[in-house]
Image 1 (cartoon, rainbow, N blue to C red):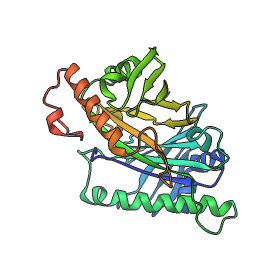
Image 2: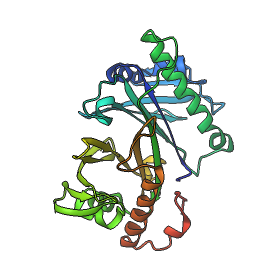
Image 3: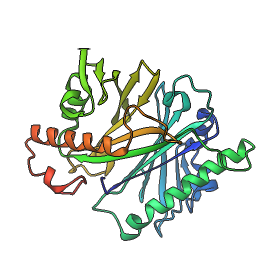
Image 4: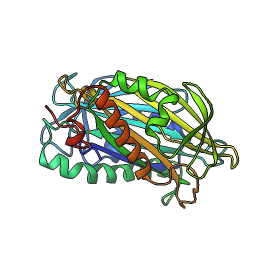
Length: 314
């Protein structure tokens, strides 16, 4: 797992638009974060405020991400106005994105954080997982309390992730991964079985069951979400595993950082009742290693694979 990337998720029993509107207001950070308290409004989307990981005040900036299938924002932070070096993408997935036709209400919140190895401190690296996990719980409770709930709401699914650094141009990664005809090279649990185009095709899984696969690329801010959808017609079962492809230079606010971060998400039933598709995070992790090896080889960066899964400044 990429050691400079941190992710936390939660099911929240509120409408996706309600969660989106709430998160777009930086002043609401006062209500649920450990110590992000907005002290001065700089412009419509920017505040100066305190932070739990720093003695100094930070400038906070929010940016909305537009997409017809899900909601998203970015939080940006830095010590100077408009000079932000921390980016926090947030995605809000409606329940019917995860399970088409579901009667479940609510939204699945996914929060991604990057820490630049050149700027990281011991406290940030040791504390970010603890703080963000607890803040995620606080956010969930805050929004559910506003809906009238008096105890935690349980979702039908949970989110798990795998992240790896790829030392190859992101354009090369997009070209390779958005073409479904290349999937046979890196997805060892699927076998081509029928006509396959760049965006859709038929496969069989490791038990010989028919799978209809589809890929769609979404541009988000300065990075991309590659939507992978797998449908088992015999069981009317969908599994979506979105993949974020983020330039390292953007994730770490470092123009010298080459390559990209590949962050993969999967939604599994809380009772772990799935019997088809990806059944464990290691299934995604193994594919990610394969993708990393292939792309770094194509890029001529033969030594990068031996350095492991994480971004290391050169």
